[in-house]
Amino acid sequence: MKQMGTLGLAMLVVLSTSASDPKDATEATISVNNQVKADLPFNDKKDFENAQKGFLPNKTLSRLKMIMVT
Image (cartoon, rainbow, N blue to C red; front, side, top):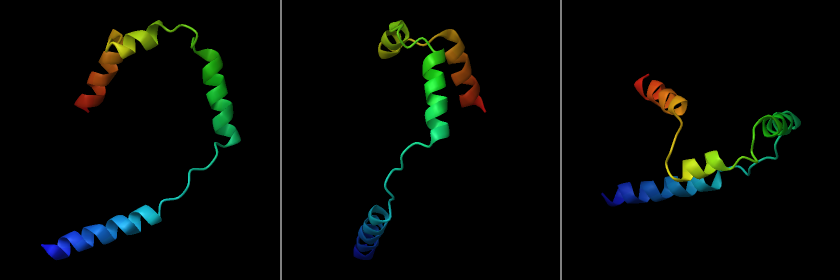
């Protein structure tokens, strides 16, 4: 049992030291994100407020149900 704890600790150390630093977004990612930001109505905060309250529109619920079933 003690060996399992030692093995777990060793794995934790190895995995934590091998994690790479995050990289900056590529130009393609920045471009797509900017397009989405321009296309969607981010100034309309009603959807954000409803989501905070736990409200989801029916089409979102339908998509979630389809994802959960498959």
